[in-house]
Length: 256
Image (cartoon, rainbow, N blue to C red; front, side, top):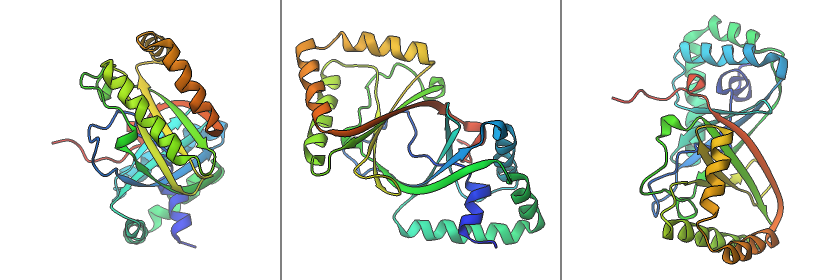
């Protein structure tokens, strides 16, 4: 049955819980809203699954999306939308595209069989006010091959305190002119709530953690410990993931 779920199973192929890692320069502006797909791929089927995504792009899938993957075989994809009505537009565009390519879609679905453990969807938005974009970034977006995601679940009712603390961290890093930035995303549905996701990047895992340690030495250690203690007291759960951007599995307009 060619419905919305079927389409995303073979085509969307990813979720971007979260995230582009290059820090947003739009602090103070309204954050971008994203429809998200999270696909858990069987380790032995990674090559086959990625071939499906590449074929989807080759068949001129009409909507833009960015793909990221983690070291535990989860693929994330972000679909930018203006509002919740944009999700219906995704469904409409899917249906039109499937009708256009006909039997090629059936073949695509067949090739995707057995590659996925499960998938789920959600909605998130970028929160520029809780993100930090350095005036002089350490790297260009193209150099950022490694991403560290920090999934933070505050206690229910503690969101305001948590957000205030996020702003304090932004002010602290800004005061030292730190070259290491981050994006913060706020989940709206599809996951355990409340949830905030911080996304940071570097050239490699080793380089990222070495530079992060250097950065930490710039700050007053007593203040950092105090803020860290406050941060921990507000949280219900924390999860971390590592991975990177997958431009070859993304469907973004080419820069002119």
